[in-house]
Image (tube, rainbow, N blue to C red; front, side):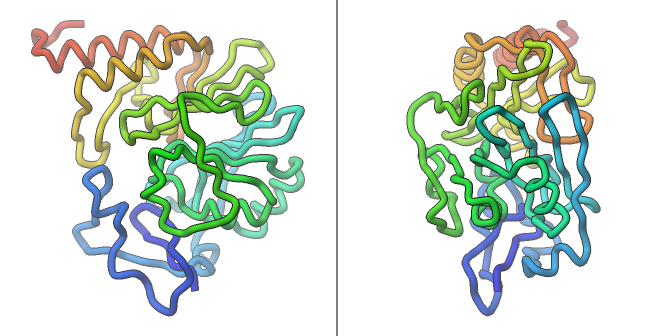
Length: 273
């Protein structure tokens, strides 16, 4: 039986009983719930949950599990002339989701921003015959091996023409964002998972070591993220969670947010803009 951690959605190798602990949740970038570590059998997930879909613009869909499960991030499906890309992952792969993805043309590749969203990537890869691109710097957080996993190194990887994975770092050493040039209006889009976290007002982004534990990144790391993203042009940002999207001026918002973050770490006056 495959068991999933109910706090982060990570799947573990087949076993008769759940693991004793989830290393991903024991790490300070995630958390073990006050009620203790919880588990669910993979096949039981569809009995309690379903996936909801949203079309954001031509060629870009998101899906999210309802009721909320684990971290409750969105996954995105990008349609490209060379095949569809699944960006990030959700734990639930039920029959309806599988049929819808096949109806949209299947998947040519899967790419994931960081270990908190690895979930059941192995099952998605098997269902659609697609490789999974993970940055090699995060290899130690792979809890369930699969022949479909492809570890890449360096600063960028072209997942498809017009779809580039960028190692930004920050939240995890291999923290990755996706840059897409194929928007219908030509403006481009950035899909950063929560390596760059869109804030509720959609006019700021943030950068943290641990989001649930509200632990900051060093100023030097934030400067590095901003520098790695500065050469890329895009209009919109689609964040990891529903409603957290930046509709325009994405690069200016990332740059200004990073500068303010660094300023505050240096002790800027309270109430400064």
